[in-house]
Length: 336
Image 1 (cartoon, rainbow, N blue to C red):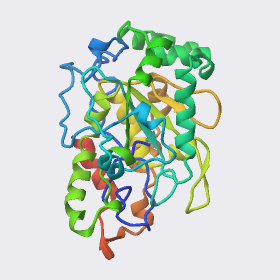
Image 2 (image 1 turned 135 degrees about the vertical axis):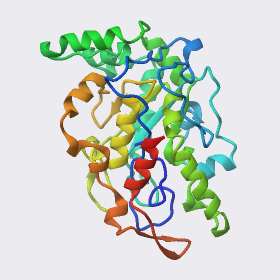
Image 3 (image 1 turned 90 degrees about the vertical axis):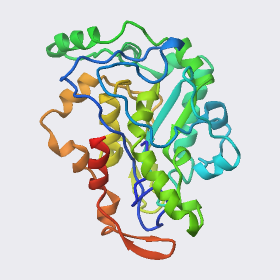
Image 4 (image 1 turned 60 degrees about the vertical axis):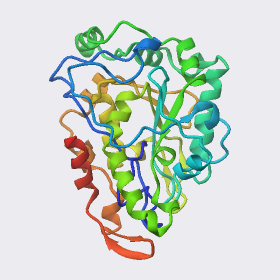
């Protein structure tokens, strides 16, 4: 999940509230306007979209990333504060590839306490860096990812052709993907957004403001990103002792919002779904929209929220406080 930190979760406001995947803001209707040009592999086109079809999203908090080369050395996912203290956070330049990683948290106090997700992501990156990316995709999934076209039933063929025609002709190659990992940056909620969990009481208020600013910047972060990864290998939730995987990822409200936001953003990146199986899966925007059409129960606000299960009450710096429902925050993000 790319987990933006709302007041009720993933900011470390309480060890009683399960954090969860957080989100970005959809910025253009899926069929209301032509597809914006898809960001391809060429260096000069990487960076914030220059399209005039959608207004630029405001950046209320700087986009803080960690280099992939640094990420590959981690034994445990470090927090924003830990990376900041070691001067390991950087802001992307116009020509740097950014890998946006979305995931579901696996405990209340840390998103990946046993490093299951971390090791899986490192393993995928290592395969690509060692020139074995072709082993990670089926033939159809590679076409979907690299060209942004739908591979599916004959009934969808005309829509798929229209979808492909509205995208740019650039294709992501294996060499491009390898280079973009070698030289790229990673945006990951726990590491890129300030966490209240690790600050002293006198800094809680300012950290909360920074969190909220980051939440409202995630749409801009996605627009700036080059790749969208869903990291959802099967793993045990540390506190609830329940299995989490791609199916549970998609039940979380913030995860849903983030997934939709990516597909509706000006970047419209083909998601790279990393699970416990060896191969990476992907799907096109067309496939996603058609599969979810007429299914309001799959919408972001119909997903699970930890604030609701916690009774909208959490402990901040030892004091019990009421919090608003995250649906209010989600609506606020969407209105951006």
